[in-house]
Amino acid sequence: MPDPFSDELSSDMGRLVAEQVPGDNALAMSVGELAFKLKRMVEGEFGHVRLRGEISGWKRVASGHCYMSLKDDQAVIDGVIWKGNASSLAFVPQDGIEVIATGKLTTYPGRSKYQIVIERMELAGAGALMALLEKLKAKLASEGLFDGTRKKRLPFMPKVIGVVTSGTGAVIRDILHRLEDRCPTHVIVWPVKVQGEGSAAEIAAAVRGFDAIAPGGPVPRPDLVIVARGGGSVEDLWSFNEEVVVRAVAACTIPIISAVGHETDTTLCDFAADLRAPTPTAAAEIAVPVLADLRLTIDSHRNRTERCARRHVERGRERLDALARLLPKRDQLLGPQRQRADDFGQRLDRGLERRLTLARGSLDRSGAALRPATLERKLEAKRAQLDATWRLVQSLNPDAILDRGYARVTARPGGETLASATSARDAGALTLHFRDGVVDAVTDTGLERPAAKTYAAPKAKPAPDAAPRQPTLL
Image (cartoon, rainbow, N blue to C red):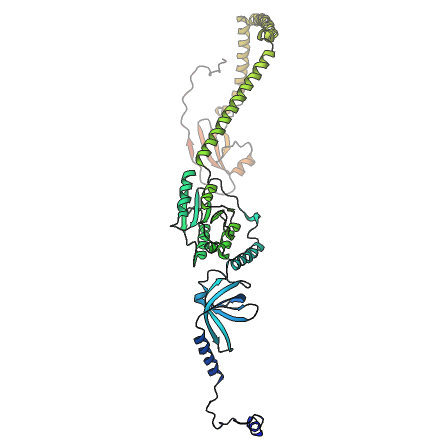
């Protein structure tokens, strides 16, 4: 073996180009070869391991894979969870939570680092689980999801109740029996898984589904929703602590009663709901009143109302009787009015008699003036006045002078009487009225005009010799 301090070795290390050393049959390996040899050695030596540590640097990338580090007070190891295993985790990992991870130890040649490929991860005891619960509770509370101002008032008597629970468990039977005993109500059950993988997503989808039902549609919209599950361990009830369930319950516009577990069990769903019931049966009791008690209450109110009404009438009658006793008697009250009526009656009789006497005297005086001789004189005077008026009318008749050879000229058409030559020339076409007919004519304007036709009026019947008829005075 060569001396390490000899000049010969020093000269070999200082060579510029690598050469095969006599007696050395170890060939030089590439970095990749060494990395993969280490990978096979680590995977062969450590097939499956269980590590206990605190999560640090948790992140889920767009591909769905999750990366983190597990650490304790002495060391740190990287970890990865592939997408298929990440979707089956029973909880959402967070930094600072102590877990137990089960998986295969391997290396990542790209960085020459060893890591654990986690296939299953669990919380390291109840303490870690409660730490995760408190951390999530503080986060959701800081967003206001548990504020009392967000709570909605429950309807007094809901017509339709939606229930989110297992479709085959004892919980739904207890709720239905309790509702039937207290107040029969239309119930719509949305069956879901209440624990295990995928249960949180089903519960949240059911709550959102009830909230998405439109009023007046083929499926009635619930007036109240009950989210229920029977008792169990913290792990059994963990689905109701999941963030997706809590947010769905808090965002629901329908009032929600949370009835998860027994009376001592508490989940984050209870804080987000509008009301927490200690048990599913208690939720049914809270949801509806007792129909029999309600009927008794209504009957009691009706009886009290009737008694109050009768009592009011009785008190009114008593007051009326008391006031009636204080009023004066009828004869005493109406005596003066009766006397006044009698006095007015007597005065009316005397007044009528006086009016009748005065009317009779007036009639006598008027009758004396209506003697036959007086009437005849007045009648003769009126007849003479009428004759004079008639003669005046006859004298003013324009056709009366036609018998003496005169003619009356009227315009054509129109028929208005023309009284001057100027108006006759302006009219142009004329009609001449004679005693025995009419003649159409035109005025002479210097032009030749056709001869006017003469229209003979029918001969009038000779008037009788008797005097003309005089108007008769009635």
